[in-house]
Amino acid sequence: MITIGAGLAAGLALSVVANTVLTRWSIGNMSDPVVLLAISLVLLIVALTAAAIPANRAASIHPADALRID
Image (cartoon, rainbow, N blue to C red; front, side, top):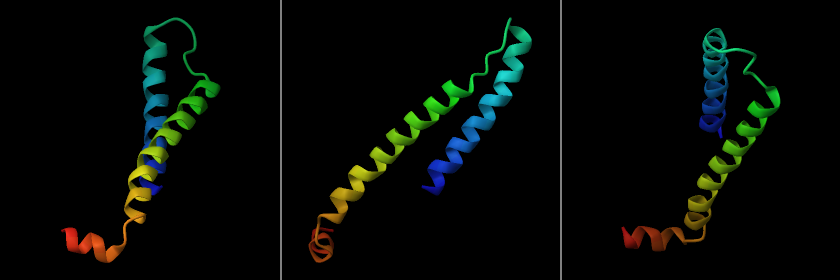
């Protein structure tokens, strides 16, 4: 969760920086907090799902069985 949060924070910060650069080159304001929030939530859900599926699979195996397989 810490890595996901750090990635989201870094992505949002970079998007704000990129937005300031792009608004100088284009016409209008390209920042929309609703879009940034929606994209952040979608990325958070995808990252949590990607982390939860292997964790659930690993939790379903008995530790002694996992050690015998390796």
